[in-house]
Amino acid sequence: MRRRLSVLFIFVFLECASNSCTALKQQERIEYDTLGSAVSTASYAVIGEYGDAIPSDFTADKFMRLIEKKIPEDYFNILKKYSLDLKPKGGYYLLSVYDPKTKALILFDYSCTPEPDGMVILDPEKYDAKNLELYDRCKGQNW
Image: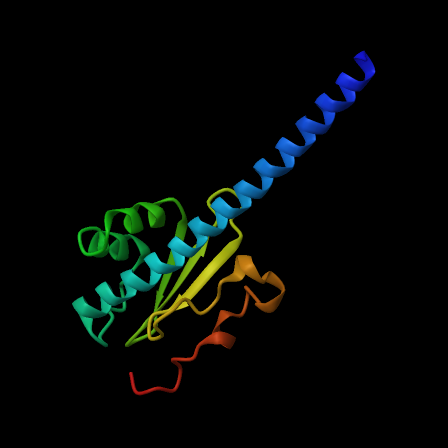
């Protein structure tokens, strides 16, 4: 009897543990989707401010100050959780989002497109993080 209870306990414990891992992955996916939406919404706010004349000295810090009151608070707060790098490209910019702990690229966005250009964390083998210009769909457009 004691052995059966032990086996049952182990089974229940493993089942609970596997379900909590699944729930965590779902939560991470929800946060990642929200991050993508925040990046897109912030892009619209920046374009609303500068149009196609992004200042050459536009940085991630200036980006965050600009969007703070122009996007929903939950979007702003999720962007604050990550390390950001912003490179002006004339009439648009490249925003790279990194995991603050591992420093790994998790998402990138060229601001001339409506959605993030690289959801890296979903398909890391698809992207060359050292050569993001390969994915620049804005290059060559009239900026």
